[in-house]
Length: 298
Image (tube, rainbow, N blue to C red):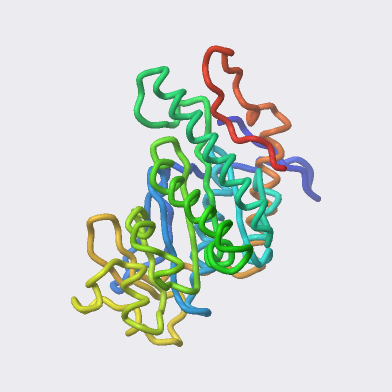
């Protein structure tokens, strides 16, 4: 990776090093104080919990890692604007409370996904890696319910849900990583057909065992794993489960608004420097081969 330089009051100074989206992401500690990390590449994550449970803190933590990873691109959807708004300068696309824009963005990502599969097929490969010409894309969605159950009509809500399900189901191998959060973990927001596609699931405190099971999977509450047992005063604590694994109690790390703003500014500076040096430009692809990049923002 090239050496990046940022300008400041003290003059030019090195702005690196950066992270990588292929690195495990630190998210907090377990009940024994041990470090907890999760790999995001080739994975997706679902985050659920009641308001104040800490789901937005975990979402911002994951987005912060992605923003500092210069080998990936960001696509952010935020119905409230402000939860992910601080990362706007780091993103290729930022979608606010506009369901039409959200649907168009997912449709474009679906096209990118299909193009990338055609690209891999051309070369006889099965998934992207650090050596490929195109970068992974992190798609972070705050409050799925706004786009899938609140805004628009039933037809557009179902279209959004179908597009999201397709990205989660097929996008992993081509580097499309979906991180989705909701404060309404109910079956109409997160149907089991969608939930089971997420390799990582985090349940912050929920008001009922049923809501906890909707995030973690059916039957975990009966086995003694329910986020309903987490104290309302223990914000940021939740149950994390990996694909095929068992839940573990985790206390997530916390970034203040000031922390997020400083990290976002630093990440944007590094990304701007990279673009200025020409390293972020999409590589030339022969006309006979399908393009695999992310279209520019609308």
